Length: 88
Image (cartoon, rainbow, N blue to C red; front, side, top):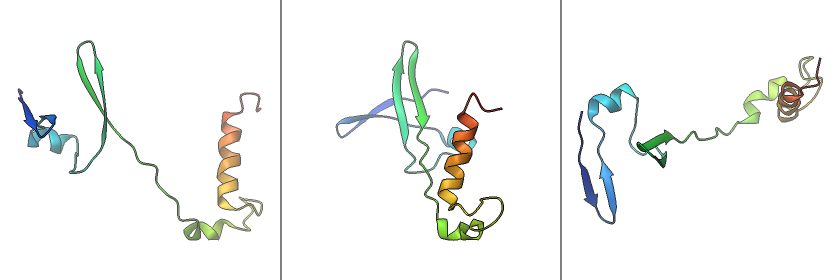
């Protein structure tokens, strides 16, 4: 499938055909990182970090699972435990 580069304002635009956009589940306003490589361009979707509403997870407080830790501390300790290469 061929597309042409168009000039819009001070930028160059490559269009994405509808069939490709639907296959990739692209949506208007989605952000991409663009990099050039020897054989062409690479577009990588930017993954936005989700903000966690800790009030929603307040039920975790005081459970045996968390040993009374707040959810952020519980997740931090779990993550650090997985990264510890000396952990048995």
